[in-house]
Image 1 (cartoon, rainbow, N blue to C red):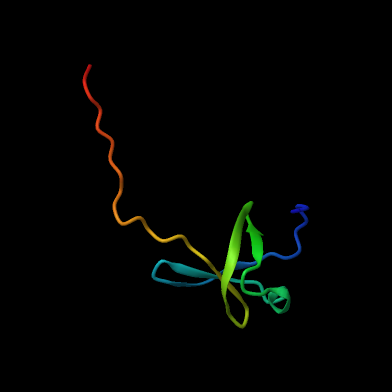
Image 2: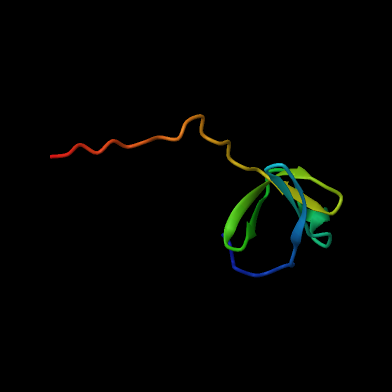
Length: 73
């Protein structure tokens, strides 16, 4: 259960293409791959670890964007 307690303040550390990494050195020793970490109210899953933080898992882009047709009636 998320208690809403702020344990640390991190920052965007590095961006590579569409990926980004969050630096939070004081919590890094406690973070493991697969951990769910709340960032501004959004739970992110730690997919990769860096020396100072983690890289969250990002969903793949859809192959095609669905379109809707509206029939006149």
